[in-house]
Image 1: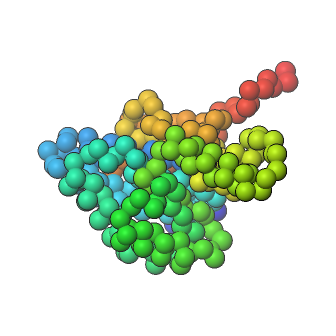
Image 2: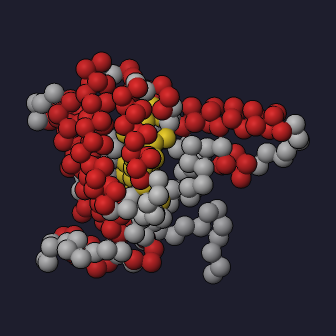
Length: 256
């Protein structure tokens, strides 16, 4: 953990940080970043302004997670279902994505963060794919936190793609193979990545929105009413502290 200057003396963040067990920080945190549109609506602003404001939260949470020693941070940025939104909003989201990568790639590399995009990336427009590939290539040798950004993603689509890739490879090999959980996990978008320990959803909605359906089987779920543009370091610490107070049994019973 790199916590020099992480919290101002006497701040809420400093108080929370003192309660955090640094040996039990979640290895993998996944976040459903929700509430941008409602945040904007409450301020009588266009929905796209909520997405712009949400970029600041993305920056803060990436930096905070890396400094806290999180191994993997997965952000749900754009779902397959989001294509149903107005074209102007979709175009703004893609433009913001390209702008963010162009502006923040230097800091990502400086902080030893490795970037990866998951989802049906091949269906995105070429300029977006090029930026994603550039970020992936320029950070592939970094050894710090893995930043997973889920784009054009849905959990069901991931499972469809997983099974198709799995059956294609097994058919080519021509061998009968017992399909178990380990085999399926090897073909997921998140192959080689530990499943999320903690799933955070902002904005208070009580659903998982087709996100990491296979991977969150035993994740602890934390719901906050805070809209994503207002979600900051303090809220992340609150979520981690709540996570550390839970008893993760994975279906078993603790010995009395």
